Image 1 (spheres, one colour):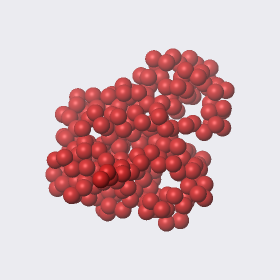
Image 2 (cartoon, helix red, strand yellow):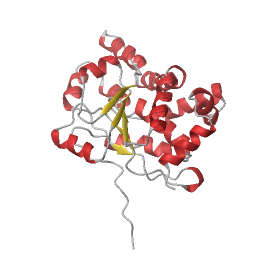
Image 3 (cartoon, one colour):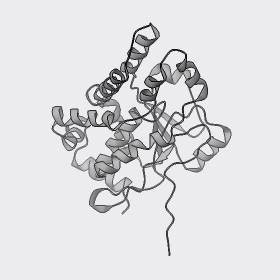
Image 4 (tube, one colour):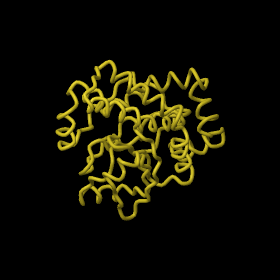
Length: 253
């Protein structure tokens, strides 16, 4: 007798990068529960069918990592969904795009370095917002989706931190992170606007993920904080009791 495995990528009309974090092997060989932790690109484009599918998943909370301008440009307010703004401004990317728009030059190598610096900002300057996500997850284990605009960078680091706290192997975390390149599709209108001023090879870096991006965050955690366990405990405030509680809530018994 075979047991069907739930789909990791969920087709939700109005999103392209909506995924379930379930199924990975975590602490003491216990599996991350399916259908309670979701990561996504933003939810403002959900169609009525997409919203119905979201509601059918039982999702009651969203954690929105977008900056203020991003949230105001693509706002959403869906019935039955409580949204928490965990603002992480995309400041490094904004400065780089402003440089290009003003006639400055930006190489592919420059863009990769810029993205690595973005991830280091997550670690050093935005820890409070990621800690707030864990606070929400510890309040109750209601199905929750966390997202940014594309569901790849801020969301990718948040997913990595959650899976680390649940004891998932680094290899599986990296593979989950890279799934964005398989699923995320840039909205056609946004892609057309960007292509008017930003070279395509630069956009390819900005709109995809690379192992080097995530690795830069991990490297800073090692260098400045003594590793992931210390970072989770000392910076994000996840003491032993909190980590045990997370594992009780989000790992299969």
